[in-house]
Image (cartoon, rainbow, N blue to C red; front, top):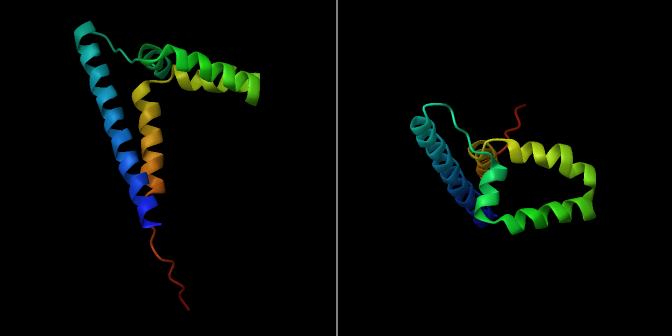
Length: 106
């Protein structure tokens, strides 16, 4: 159990570091453009590997449900990349935390 907690914490911290990197890149782009620039998760994913984005869309629409892609996944893909990745990283860190033992008071 300790190894799984360690892996969740380790992966979560790396994902949070990626989120911080995306936030810094958005900040640099904002300074260069002299306006607020936030790159969405969908744009970032499309630049990295557009084929996997198309495959994910086809998979979700065919096997899960077409309505899941349109309102839900597209809404997530339009959010800033640093925010979505940061939330996922914090979820991993939360799952990897050390839990306090429950104390029963009489």
